[in-house]
Length: 144
Image 1 (cartoon, one colour):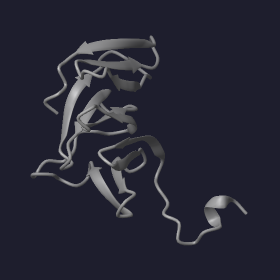
Image 2: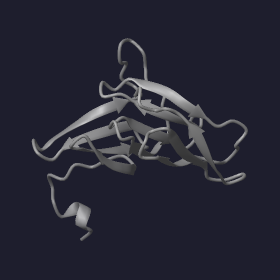
Image 3: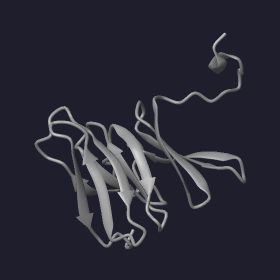
């Protein structure tokens, strides 16, 4: 029997993707339902930080096709889209989404590999295909 069926109380997720530990919590993306989850290992609480179908301040989220993610040294969560609008999207601690970078004219590609230098003045991000390229974007990114 497959491991996922051995424990009946197991929580199932729709298309697990990127994961990062920041601010004392584990954050991960599920592409199938466009959600960012937050797990606090101290309190053992799992919650949804972002859901593109649930309005925050009256506005639906802008991130779709959620894939890999990271946090900068301030702990802000940045998620890459696999499809969607080909953006890097900031997800605030309140679940508000804001586009930071958008790739254009990149058919059949996806955004990947978001990383920051220790000073939060440079973001590195790649377009995976057609052509595969990595970009350095100058900040600062400390306002998030």
